[in-house]
Amino acid sequence: MLAKVNAAKLCMQSGSTMIISNGLVNNPIDQIHPEKSTWFHPAKNILTSRQQWIWNRPIQKAIIHIDEGASRALGKNSSLLAIGVKSIEGRFYRGDTVSIHYNKKEVARGMINYDFKEMDQIKGKKSNEISTILGFVREDEIIHKDNMVASR
Image (tube, rainbow, N blue to C red; front, side, top):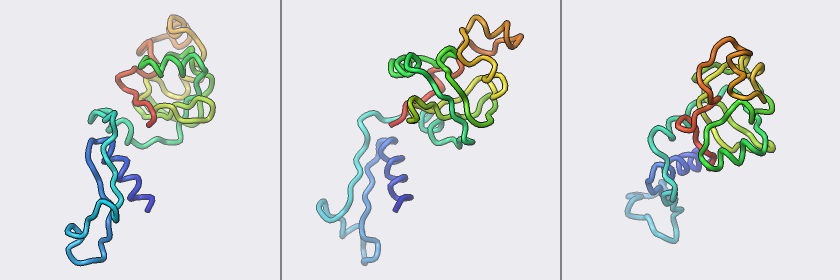
């Protein structure tokens, strides 16, 4: 049943309706009834294909823990900056999808611009300090807003 519910979530995010009905009867489509079947209707905020791709990419138990200010900024569709990162968990590399947590709850997922070793050095720092710390700057953002999807 968990697989069916996960499939329903994906359908809803994609703008599709899904029905779970009895498949053990002849002509199950003819047996679909609004009151006897479970209907999953499209979500109001449908994800773009890119957002779906980011959301459904595998996560290697990589978690970025953020502070309250970063959480508020993400709620306003802003990019994640190093200064808002409190701690990191797991090993990840540039381009990997990581889970972003605030108060032990996932608030977003996104493709990260720095690996775990670099993040450990720049977490909590201002963007203009990254060059001094690492000797280079890939991006000012840890995760750009175009490469991030808020949790549903």
